[in-house]
Length: 120
Image (cartoon, rainbow, N blue to C red):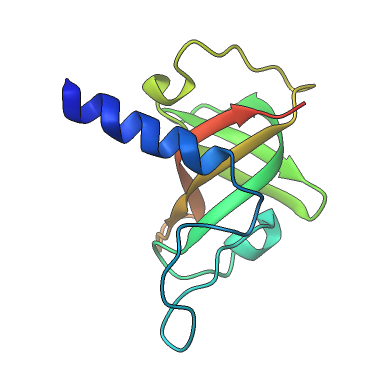
C-alpha cells in the first residue's frame, strides 16, 4: 500500500508540469519526444510518452475506453477506474492526461492513461 501511495504521488506531480515537459533526462537521438496532440498519437511508436489536454467526450463500449478530443482530433484513451480516483469528469471539463501510446495491429493507437487531472 505504501508503494502505491508513493507512485500515486509521483504521478500526481507530473500533472503539475506544463504539457510537453517531463522529468529531466537525456534528450536526443533514440529518445521519443513527449506527444502533446491527439493526432500525433495515431502515428506514434508503442510506449511513446504523451501529455494531452482536452475533453473526454464519452465512454465507448470497450472496457475502460473513452473518446478523447483536443484541437487536433480524437483518440481512444484507456482510463482504469482507479485512475479517476475520486474525480467526476464531464465532457465540459478540460482535462490533462499523462500516459503512453498503446500500439496494436488490430485497432488504431490508443493512449493508456497513468494520471488524470481536471484543469478547468
